[in-house]
Image (cartoon, rainbow, N blue to C red):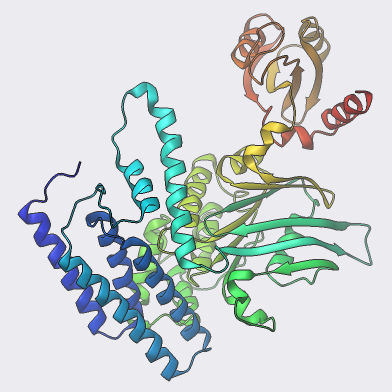
Length: 492
């Protein structure tokens, strides 16, 4: 149930409506987009009428109009007409707000509200019960946020449902090398992060260059449904303006950080009067504000990576391609950047699609919605991250132990009836145990915690690290483990 609004809250709502009207009167496109953002926030936070979806649609219209103006693909007359339509839409929703009763943050049971939006927003607002339910509550919140994002995407791109890239059996052959990128199939939607993982020379960078239009595939079909809708002939200039790319090899930039960003912003059509404020917000989000007056040589590799991400975002892209962005970051910086990428992908104002390549398997698995695993140009896995649980039935543990030779550790592990194999790897050892019923329990009742206890107390050596990789693509990238699984499959 929604608590009655106080007088102060009502005055705040009235003030926000007035501020939106003032922004509309300026005739400035950036102010028009800002008015749409504020309108959608007002609709979500304080009204139970079905106002969220149409206000999100207005944001999409404003973003699209600004993109056309910056790309110089729209006439002055058409720009004026589209601006007028968006302004009219904002005014109509404001009028509906004036006639409706503000209801506060939690949506009520108003019969006029879209049932799907009502259900999703209500689930996001409900108080959580006990601390013991915290994990399930977080999962529920994530699912509800995802559902709301789907509502927003359908309102933004009703024809394509937010489909940004579709690749069907694309490949790339080189005449001077034996390397081939073969039969890659993938899709990317607004709000999604696609992780592309694999060892060096597996084809990750080649794939990104194909997706951004720098390389022509030797075969297959590549489409950009949302970007190309309504056009008969492919316009690479238009497509590339909607794609931002951060290379693994960071380019050197002369002068100060802020001056470089200001130059890029002017190239993409940002009005001079609003560039500094726009850039200040971006720099603050990525922790670069203290380096705005620094030169390239005065900032570390990690901050250079953040700078390149900010520079890419200046163009307001729909698709962000990142080639090994974690390579120069320490552990803490990696987590910060990954969290910010998730927020970018699921932005309610402008959800985008992100493709990120990396050799950091576990970090990418934690953030990605879908995963593409490459090895020597071949696809080892392609699909939702949740499908990784179907890779293997056994319990597989990666661990590091010192003070005892491999032969002693192997003898101890395989002495258990459930022990299957033990192999050494770059990170230590990988052990496999039979798993009779499910992924957590094997024949001897030994779950992951039991394995850790065994390794720490009964197995020779000193345990320093352990991870359950049963549901990780790591099992596909360890050749001896993959061979073992293939042989066992053939025998069965």
